[in-house]
Each structure stands twice: as structure tokens, then as C-alpha cells.
Amino acid sequence: MNLKSITFRCSAPQLRRLENAMLAQSTDNRTSFISKALDSFLTFVEQDENQGLNLFELVDKVDSLGSAANFSSQA
Image (cartoon, one colour):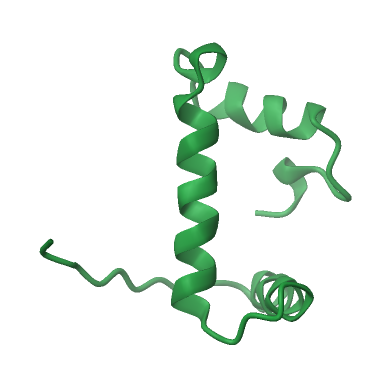
């Protein structure tokens, strides 16, 4: 497997949410945490009922599942 690095910047609130989530999961490795989150999201998107949805429809679907805060308000 040929691994590639991805670098991105995030806002201070996003970084705080990331750090809080890492603490809740007892994870001290950002790369591992983000990789697991991306894998979970891709698994969600690949489900039959989600495959035809666009990004906005996916956000609405995630919001409808009932997390602590609306996904659409956390970006």
C-alpha cells in the first residue's frame, strides 16, 4: 500500500471538538482517530440506502440520526 499524507487546517472550535472527542475515546493519536472517523463515514456512505445521496442529503441524514449536536452546525 502506498500511503499518502493529507494536511489540513481547522478552526479553533473544530480543534477543540477533535481534542475532546479524542479524550472521550482515550486516543492520543490524531491520525488514528481521524482515519477511524473517515472509515466510519465511508462505511455509512456505502450503505445501500445512502449511496445515491449528495453531500447535503448526507448531512441531513446524519442530523436525523440524533447526535448531541447537528452535524451541519459543527463544520
